[in-house]
Length: 215
Image (cartoon, rainbow, N blue to C red):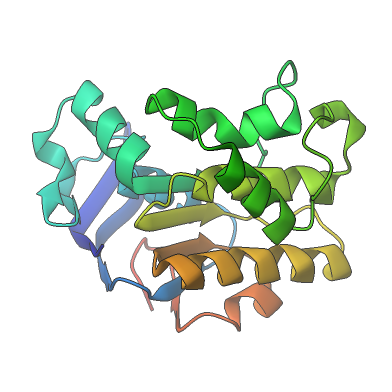
């Protein structure tokens, strides 16, 4: 599924976050977005997912214009077609690891225990499904977040600094898991990162400048 961003601009009060941003991501392509802190990378990613609003321009996922959808329709599109890996994990502490991973399937009214177990194994968490999040390390929690984002086989995966809080060895393992699963599914991947090592693995690297446009 393709992602198309056309001339997108976002402001907070009198301050421009980014302006006139355009990009296209083809199905199966991995694009990394880099740039200094505060230039709007995470906000741009949230706009791509329809989690945040924008002031002008257009975002299309698989030809569907997000600007023409209401909040419920955007939520349904995300639930069906988009996976999102948050920088802060956002795992639910009262659910065990397997239940956290299965959450997108549950929201779709589906159950696929085999898929959950397969993904846990794929990200190096085999046998840990019954543990609670507080029993895991930061690297393990990030892999839970990746498995959760991929469990419903999204056509588009958006990841915000998925290795930002991890040591280099763990970060490499997380990227291995992320890339292996997105490649296997033919999903488009957009990754916001400060990590040169993570960006180096992308098909394309785009730098968001302080003036809110790509270099």
